[in-house]
Length: 500
View 1: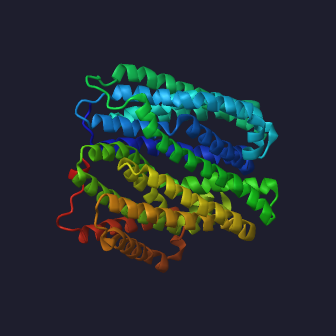
View 2: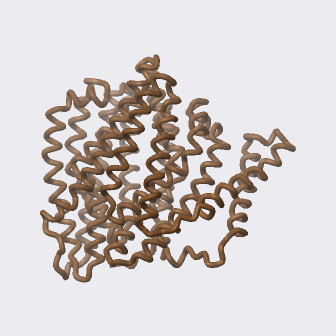
View 3: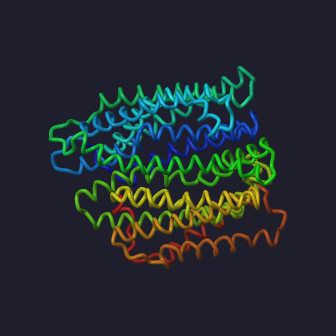
């Protein structure tokens, strides 16, 4: 097996994911202009439903494969290939009956989740993709566990390009922007991408699989017993997320918006605001995918010191990055929203949601740490509490305050859920949480650097929101932000050796 370097793998994954996120942002903006924000809202609901169906059909396959294969690799004489076979068998046990059930009940599911009877055909087509998607997820988890993260990342890029290319071609060829037709075109593009990924990963597995010279520590039934809590947690999260997404257009109509306007606002939020907030987290998403098997392997080997040091340094780096991004979005959210063709509403929402960005980004890495430490039950319960709070706030606040009720739901659920995650990660890793180092320094550095960088605008107001003014501001702010951390560094601070 290749020796893992967290830094090397994170850099490789970040470059690939950054490219992918740039394409996704551009494609979202193009789709909004081409088919309208209301249709994008319908597609967002369809995507949320498909993610739920895929999670139920696969039993959180990628996480299970990544974690259990990694734990098998951490044992002296394990057999990761056998663990992968157990994972595929478990997925097929789930995906075949789920596929049949979705096909049978496509009509009511379409009405319930997509707010339209005309989407039943697209729902049936989606269901046929579930077994292939489950197989792909298992193989992605395996390659992640054996330190071949670029294999899965490259497949993700190729699949996205294939799907986006086919969907773009179908939209330009047909010229039909009805939601039901666009949704059918989307499913066709997804089918081509899923088939490509499944075939490619299967071929690569047989070419690059690790030799199995030991005895597998897990039987199939033992694997199923361990995987069921992970699967239930993933399904619970996906189900609550889908319910939350489905409720937003409904509650917007209760506020007084028309059905089309509610879908338009939801499409703007899902197609512009959320992608902009999450776009800078590319490096954290790459790191989290690597952390789960890394922490699981260290935890299985009893290396508590490495788990503790990884936890502290990952939290510290995440907060340094997240506070900076939060400050940038707070300053330039309006400009970004207009550049993305989201109008004044999207720019205002980006600025309002900017302060919650550190909590959102913390969730990405804290979930990886917690799952790697084997605290899946806590993760599931915490997600349950978080989404119950979010859904309750949606039901109460959106009918009263309209679109701004979504802001309230994001703030309350993210602050509550991620404070709990932080507490559990620190406790499990036996880490002493240093508030001044982890939170105080980033907040002070951001406040100082952004205040100082604003001085040229005070003396020359014409620089504000011009390309030259923005570049000058960011150059000064980023330089001062890094300088503050260099001046306030601790003598014994070492990051690179631990992350090797």
